[in-house]
Length: 290
Image 1: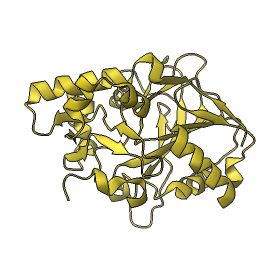
Image 2 (image 1 turned 30 degrees about the horizontal axis):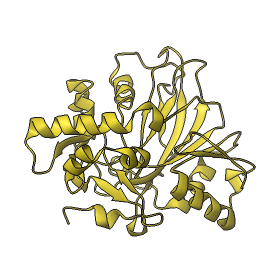
Image 3 (image 1 turned 135 degrees about the horizontal axis):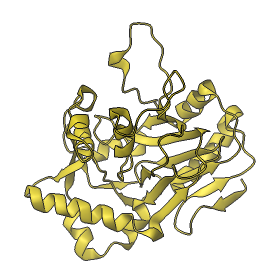
């Protein structure tokens, strides 16, 4: 495949691939690039929700956080990261939904608070803004490789506790109190995820991480902030400025991401499917509670 680097540390743009008609052979090449480079960009794609789901299923099981909220027989709908209402208006800046979007502007990996975390996010640009609204990715694999031993040794063999409401509370206590952020019990994951294909290690952390297992609360919180600060330094970050038809796929085991602000009077719509990690992706080795 013809590729172009996104940064000199991680990520590639893949050219001349139509994701709406991807076959098993092409997927095998895409998957190798995913394991090796952690983040993939495809431009100028025409891909509807059905094709989006077909693509996601090649990577693994589609994550479904709202199965318990749907009526019997009601089909899964592709989630959207959007401030656009069904009537064409946009949510207000202090609306709880907009605050939820602002919580996504904290560095995180998706679904670390679920019993099965995410392997990948497949994000598609639908309605984009002229300014702002970028998505930033940070390689925790590159950051871990460069991390000084004094910091690495403090977390290498430890676990991190994750809670959905924790990240939302950093934005708004009212937001964090919503039932949707309390569906799942706290999750404990190893702090380092080894890729079973490449054997590379990556720091596994997120804004949902609220404690280091076995460490006093204040010291643990300070360590979490220091670790996130290290792996999100400019050399490890790629900033993506959206165009309609862009498809961005990244490895949640080895990449943090966050949104960036935009004029909230303007609509912005991204389609997002998370794929759950499986045994072959190394998830079993990450579990500290069975």
